[in-house]
Length: 115
Length: 116
View (tube, chains in turn orange, red):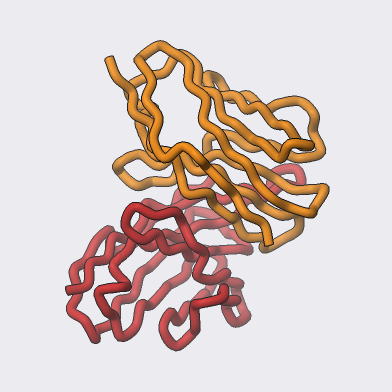
């Protein structure tokens, strides 16, 4: 079974600065998908970014980018120019290929953004 | 993406009773999922709901406790039966949308359940 580990329960960043959230995973599969979700206090889970394992290029979405290291089974999220609205829980998730594949979530990292 | 609504958004229930949570999506989807998020915890998948067939439950979750209906491609319900305080959680439904072969899951706003 796949496992996802987020070793940072909490992180803090100053507004306009850059922060990196860590995620590692364990799998024997060669093809899979990785995701970062954001959960603000409203509790709505929001998809931030997606990475396909077969792609060597790191995914980017505006201020959000990932550092995907397949051999190391590492998938970190970098948030640039942090904003107050970025404050939330961030969950890393793994998904096997194929239909009806469930998401396996990490334990989450709470990000605080300070002035 | 997908627009998903859940009802109720929150409820306080007495132990021993049951609550049915509704999930409505704005477009037809094949796969719908129900997750539980216990206080301060991550999300755990309860079951996958397919239209026209029985739901598939994850280890530790049973149909008698969490019966699921999926009458059509835009709607599903999850019932939490014979509730106890340990069932106090946020319950979230999600749907899968496929983009170029990859599936992405989009979540509803969740139902916060408190059992007293």
